[in-house]
Length: 279
Image (cartoon, rainbow, N blue to C red; front, side, top):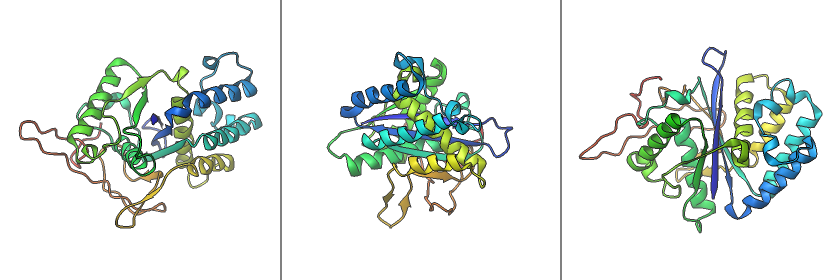
């Protein structure tokens, strides 16, 4: 399984700013055919000659002005149908506040990352047990930031209680150029859609709400052993830093408080505990 992750967020001084991480899970056996059909879809709407002529970006087709164009709305409807045809499963988690990727520390993996990875792991275990592991791809930024994300991700997978138990996700992330990576483009569009939906709450644009609902119908929700529902699309309370204990909300409660795994030689502080400082 190939998993593509991207984010959407506003600057900290934007009223009601939010940060959203989205992931899309694409069966590796179907990726080539999906890639081809997505190119055909983009070519039909925008008359492009090669895939790299148009990079799908949420802010280009779902902004307040862009969403008023009938062509953009019809494209998103076709995109959702294409995802359904190929059984592409999205996840999206949103939090209050602005998450600046450049501020990530290599011993602190933000809660939005952890929540996405936990959902992917459960999805793989429940729906694709025959596949050993999911491979995660992030949108490449710059070498320094990519390296910090990679180290933080790796630390989480080997040192954190939740990460250690994510046995269906490879512990080493990959970084892709979004211009030529349709999976990253999908994640970008979904992240933007979800983020804007919560920024605009409680008065959402009717079209944005339609697309939010369309993407959410494709996600995977599951029941825990104590009959809690873990939602594939969900708002997590609190800002990206510090991590807060979740509250009950309209989409259900989900405890996220976790403790690092102790190591007799090295203990990494700040892999998701409550004492982390805001970046």
